[in-house]
Each structure stands twice: as structure tokens, then as C-alpha cells.
Length: 500
Image (cartoon, rainbow, N blue to C red; front, side, top):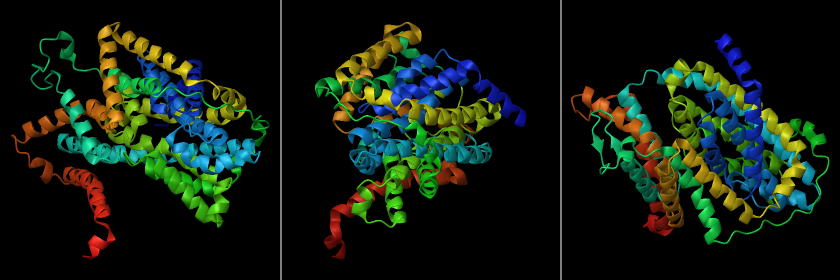
């Protein structure tokens, strides 16, 4: 094991992989610092590039983006009061007030160093907990695996958006799309309508690019892209504050634990963790709410530590069980499958070198973000002045070129455009995109394991209820679907109706 770990370290430290990690960090800071661009969008734009790269190189690139994107969102939140990512919304509360007081350097340094602490603590938990979960999951058969994938789909569908019904509709539509192509058991064509290109099914990569990237472009065009306000404030002496990594440590540690816990729960979401951390820090500080909100450094340290700790927490269910917890890890799941790797307990047994490489790449990305973000802060201040009407056409070109280059075919580009327009309409009418995307990614595994379990049990569906682990997963899935419905029903009744 030690030999594998060191061999993976040397692989990650190769010049090519280090360069990939650095490029990912720089791109992630750009994506995170630019309001309107999301980390999942950045991931999708890089996916076609990773298609031709070795697994370790591609994940060095993507993990660099993942870790740095979380940190980058705090820059615009502090300087403009415009969170670059949804998870940076809590940082804007106290961070922007500090910036208005002329303490921009302190606020940014606190955010970056807190992100570093959160990422490092989440990595420690990831390394310690993941192998244990993976070893336990190795005992899963087709029954348990089918129930586990169903649980993942149910969690995302119920927690991703406020409307459970719309989440379930989105997920079910994705499952229907996975039936297109060759039957996994018999090999006969299904719903291909005589189109040869459909025999291989619908490639999830063009779908992923279409769902995440094209709606961003269309929204900018329809809603008339706005130019981000200019940042005139000079930022000086940020790097000299690197020692701030040791400040407010109790806030950073506790907030990191909150972030790890929330991140490990599929579908819980980053905003929940950062606002929990922010509120907890306010209580710990003993300050009044108005005083704390009026530019307290602890109000920057806590949410940023929780924000970055989400990364390691979200990787735990992805690597050990193959269940992505949010849109970003859903894209990472797609990247793993592009490399011919199947996330889950078998990944730790069949590809331990890759798993250790992921751990090392995560560590290097966290260190790079700490130094690069502090050294290049003036660059990101300049980036904030770039108008969206310049960025949107560039994103559109990346989408077309990226999908065409997959197979040198306009078929994939057409699929991307169709799903892009569909994603735009879904967002307009409140249908979440993530359940449909996850259903397309996880659907084949769900069908294969479900049908295998039914074949082994001679068609007896009660086999899913007689296996304890499978039954547990199904009960959790049922609870995750019903809980929001019950909560909404109670909220509509109101206290007077409950008394009656």
C-alpha cells in the first residue's frame, strides 16, 4: 500500500500533471471569480480536453478547477458583493462590509487561507474514511447496488430543487432516455427508429455540455448580458498575509467539519453548509448579529472554510459508492466513466494507484490555490471588468468545438444543441437539470443491476425487500422523497389548522 501511494505521488508530481493541476487552478479561479459562470460549467468545458488525456492528468486538471473554483467565488463576493458561486453568498455578508471599510486585503487573505484549511481538513477525512466505506461496500451484490443507485437518484431528485415533483419528472425523463440503444442483456435495438447513430445510445458528454453550458449562453442573450461593474479599489499586500492561515483557527476547524458533513450527503448543497457555518460562527463569537454582519473577519473565515471543505466531503460518496452529491461531482462521475473507470468500492481494489493519485492531486491543488490566489489577486480584479458579452460567444465556440472533436461528428454537436435548448426551457420553468443528467449517467447501471437481480431471483421483486442493506437504502430513498412533501404540507396548514 505504501509503495502504491508513493508511486502515485511521483506520477502526480510529473511536469505534465503538475502543469495540468496549475492550469485547472487558474481556470477555476477565473470561473469562480466571474459572476454568472459556474464551476460545473467550467468542468463541462474542460471535459472534451480530458477525453484524450491519461486518467491522472485529466483528474489533476479537474480537481485543480474544483478546489480553486470554490475559493474564486469569494473574490467577487468580497469586492463587488456579487458571489461568484452560490456557496460564496454567505461570504459576501461580512466580506463586502470589510472591503467597504478599506480592508479588502484582509478579507481576501482570510477567505483564501480559510479555504486552504477547509480543503486540507476535508482531504484528511477523505483519506481516512473512504477506504473504510469502500471495504464495506465490496460486499454489495446486484440487489444492493441497484438499491444504492436508486437511492442516489432519489436523493438528488428530492433535494436538488424545491419542487420534488419536478425533480422526479426530470429524473424519470433521464431514465427514459437511457433505454435508447442496444438492450444491455439481449443486445437488441430499442427506440432507435432505424437511426444507426442511436444504437450506441445517447452519449452523456454532449448532453452534459448542452445542459450546463448552452443555457448559460441563451440566458445571457435573452436576458441581455450585463457588464460587471468596474473595480477601482487597489489591492495591495495580500500575499504578505499568508500567515493568516493560523488565524481564527477554531472557526475554521468547526466550519470545516460542518462542510465535510454536509458535502458527504448527496444533494444537500453548498449554500446550506456555508450559512450553517456563518450562523455558528456568529454564535461562537459572542457578538450581536448587527455587529457580526457589519464586517467581522470571522464571518469570512467560517463560510469559506466550510465552502472548501465541501469538496473533500463530496468526493467521499462519489469515490466509494459512485453517487455524486452535486452537479460538480456529477461531471466528475462522467469524467471517470470517460476514462473507463467505474467509481465505487471496486475502484479501490482494481485501481488503487488512481485513487491515491486523486488524493495527492487534491493536496497539490489546495497548496497551489493558496499561493496562486494570493499572488495573482490583481489579475482577478482585472478579470472582474470583462463584460459578459465577450465571454458568452467564447463559451459557445468551446461548446461546438468540444462536442464535434469527440468523434469528429456533427451528430454530437446536434445532440448538444438539442439538450441545450431543452435545458434552457427546463431552467425557465423550474425543472432541475441535475436529476436528468444523473439519470442518464447512472441509468445503465441501475437497469443492469436491477435486471440481474431479478434474473437471479427468478423474477421475484421481493428480493429488494428481503436483503437488509437493500431495504435500508430503499427506506432512506422513500424518506428523502416524502420528507419535503410532508414539510410543505405542514407549512401550508399553518399553526391554526394544526391546533384544530
